Length: 410
Ligand code: NAP
Image (cartoon, rainbow, N blue to C red; front, side):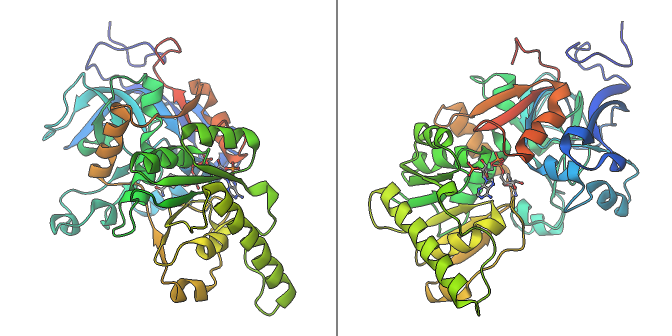
């Protein structure tokens, strides 16, 4: 018998779309520590429009963007959507996941009901003038992150995506493994291979912040796959071992240094000298980790305020610091002398386009890259896993939560 609401893991008849679903929901009056911000609620299943796909979710990846969504800062995502006309007073997060195509809207041609898919995390309007003119959709004025800026993300029994967000699930992976590599993997892929001419080439030394994190674990493997020489930064011996096992040529422990954060005022000669001394000590440690005196051709950044001054100093002449986040803060200082005299590039980078998502999916499918799944939580742990991430107390690699998959299927 068809029902209007199914329990988690209780699969409806294929293609039957119930009225209601369980979702892990953030509301403005709960903004704050992620552990308290997410709560399980029953919500209407969203209607499927033209070009859209409704997916029965099996598992979802946990990412930093929904730490920010839970905190309500630096962007109040619900208020921002409402300013653009959205009615919902809640946020269903989750910007990646795995599941089964359950219903398709008019005009959908590339996927069919029953297909097993993984979902990428950005949306855009394929008919936008800037895309039709040949632009990268990630540069389109219509681009927005699904499950962060856009609502109805992966932390629900059903999710609504655009057709081009669906990629074939690598068959060798479980639902949980498939759910949690695409966001960090595709972001790191674009950072390392998307910004000509500063792309990873054989033999290039590459510095990777947070090497044991989601982005970092993907970045180490991508650099290795393309012949580069990854050197990772971490904060513990266990994380250092993890990075070496993934293929890092050397590892730096940032807890052995003290010069983090914004630059001292230039008029404070003593503090500036101490900063430079400590940064050079970090640079010498990089040489030691690499085994030769060469500077990184690319610095993969996402840590932001605490690390940018060091990244900009260390980067090779003509090299690139490529940044996709600001975990430690977004008000960072740069000593511009190093930027212009050594003709370095500071490049912003944000998620990935369709081609880059497909490329990393194929590398994982063909076993060049491990999805680095370290933790699989239950649906009720969505808040807790984001809290672990907020506290930097999570295990290395990527985390997933089960939606409709059971632990035996994950
Ligand atoms: P993650 O798994 O939590 O990894 C972040 C790593 O940062 C941690 O492993 C930690 O490593 C390191 N870290 C923490 N505090 C630090 C500090 N003070 N100084 C230096 N390193 C520090 O998170 P993630 O998934 O890799 O994401 C990282 C950031 O990138 C987040 O801010 C996220 O929002 C952003 N991001 C952006 C995009 C995009 O498309 N724009 C996509 C993915 C992620 P150690 O403590 O071992 O050093």
